[in-house]
Length: 413
Image (cartoon, rainbow, N blue to C red):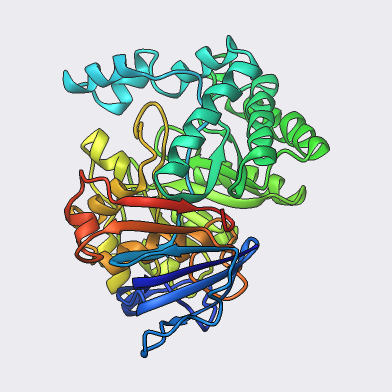
């Protein structure tokens, strides 16, 4: 099928060079063509350019489908490289506790947090868990998400971690967008292993990982390397075990304190290190000349009233930066990436162009999908957002409560 989108006011995110990511000053450039067209053959972008200046017909005027985008912006769909989309229930009771002034640590100590979700997940069937996750997935796609990563980590037992990963695999098989699965058994220590840290780590390495390999359930392995959770030494041990069965590492790090998570991520050649609310010069320095993508999760900072990742400092240091939603029931109960975009601009002082690059190409890199998604490039999947008639790109993060998406195109549909 041949689809032509024509009369586009501005076509953003074009990339002839097929960059893997943008970093430093180049993040402020979100390249565009005015008065443009895009030609899509089946699922992929075939070509693009400027409309004929003589107002003549485009050579592909006989396309099977023609979409008029007069006055509209077309751009790559968002990529969400960090979510916990598969969870059993909302946790609004903890929301009230937060209003009352309870800290993240106090809520966890009272039986809330990750262990709360783990208990609810244990009692829920795989079928029901899948149904709820599918509804969330459909919602985020409608809001412009064109690829998504989903973590386990609310199981904390062999049976329940595998239950989560099987749900993610089912979503992979039916989703119109690319879905990547991350094994996060090292999210926290379950109650039964509160006083036996080594025992739980052995359970992850000796039982969970072999079962995951046997069923082909994960693409990535992640560890919550954080104060009060997994130490850098424990994180490295678990990551290396995951690498032996072919899982690509990611790291949760530096959310609650300077935890050593950045150093572990770089040492283990992690694809990304996520959170980074607490960063110093040492962390920025260790990221230099590494292949690890720093990922900020401003939804979490907003919801928990915590410091924001110093995105401005990271970019000014010449580094790349990606953004993601951290969609989860306890600390970021939203997968709407347009709000992430606004928070990055308002609270982290990113320019709109920097924020868009962070949610498209750089986020695609953080999922290992930079060759397939993240820019308007020949041969990449036609996962695109077509806006309503809006005044400018900057209007999108500025008008943070407005509905600005007209159509979401996934693989040409």
